[in-house]
Image 1: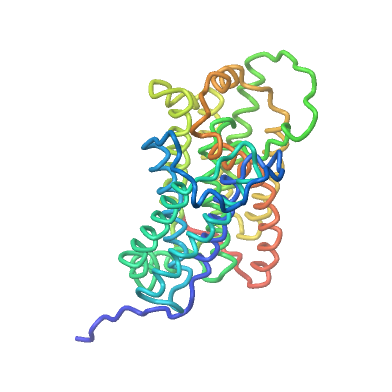
Image 2 (image 1 turned 135 degrees about the vertical axis):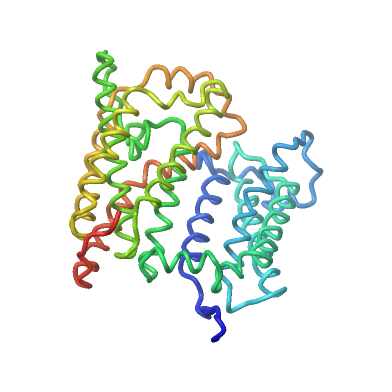
Amino acid sequence: MAATMTVIDPRPSPLTRYLLFAYALLIIYASLHPFSGWRDQGVSKFAFLAGALPRYITAFDLVTNFAAYLPLGFFALLALHPRLRGALALAAAGVAGCFLSLALEALQTYLPSRIPSNLDLATNGLGAFAGAGLALRFGVGLLSGGRIHALRHRWFLAGGQYDLGLVLLALWLFTQLNPETLLFGNGDLRDLIEHPPAALHPAEVFIQMEAAVAACNLIAVGLFLSGLTQNDRPLRRLLLALLAGALALKTLAVGVLLKAQNVFAWLTPGAVVGLACGAGVLMLVMALPRVARLALAGLLLMAATVLVNLAPANPYLANALQQWPQSYFLNFNGVTHLVSLAWPFVALFYLMLLAPRQAGEGRASPDKL
C-alpha cells in the first residue's frame, strides 16, 4: 500500500501577506485616530521611552494592547514563511511588531488627543512576540500542507487575486462590528457631506429601506463568495457559515452597545424581511454563470450603497449611540467605521478587475448548491 504524503508548498502565501497588510493598516488607523490637531508639542518624540509609567493602569488597557498586536505577530510570521523559519522568523516578526508600535507611539506625540506610553509599547511588543510564537507553533503547520492549506485549495480557486477576495470577505465580516449601521449596511457617506434637514418618515419607510439594504447586501456578498469558489464545490455550507459569522458579529457589536439584554436589537422587522428575501433570491441567482454573478454582485453593491445613504436614521439606534460610553472603544469604533465606509467601493473595484479575468479563463459554469 502506497503511503499518503502531505505536499508542502514552499512558496510564500499571498493570503497571509494580504492579511498582514490589511491588519497593519487597521492598527495604524486605530493608533492615530482621529488624525486631527497635529502639532509639535515641544517634546522629543521618544521622550516617552524614559518617562514614568502611566498614572492610571487598567487591566482592560493592558489586555487590549496585547490582544491588538497578537494577530499582527501571527500574520507577520506566516508572511515571512518559508523564507525565514524557526527562531529567526519568530524574532523578525516580533521585532517588526515592536518597531511598528514604536513608530506609532512616537507619532502620537504630535497628537494632543493621544498619550504615548512605554507601557503600551511593552504590551504591544509582547503581543507581537506571542502571536509570532503561536504562528510558529500552530500556524506554519496549518499553512504548509496542513488542514487550512488543504481547505483553502479544496474550496477556493488558486491564485493571489482570489486570496485578495478572501481578505475582502474577512473585512466585510469585520464591518459587522460597527454598531452604527443597518444590518449589512456599508458605504454610508453622510458624515462626509452636509446633512440635509431632518424629515419625518412613517415606520413602513424605514422597514422597507432596511429590508432592501439587508437583502441587496446579502445577495451581493453571497455572489461575491461564489466567484471565489471552485466549480465543483457545494456553496450552501460556505454561505451559511458566512451568514452565521456575520450575524454573530453583529450581535456582539449590538451587545456591547446596548448591553446584554438587547443583543438582538438588530433583528428588526426590516432585517427579518431582508434576510428572508435575500436568502431566497440568492439561491435562485446562484444558477447564473460565474461572470454574470459577479456583474450582478457589483450592481447590487451599488444599489445597496445608494439605499444606505437614502435611508432615514433609526431613532432607537441614534438614542443608544448618544448614551454609549465610547471611551474604551473610540479607536476601535473609528476603525470599524472607516472599513464600513470604504468596503463597498473597494469590493466593487475588485469585482471590476476580477470579472474580465474570469471571463477570459472561461469559468462560466454554474456552481452546485
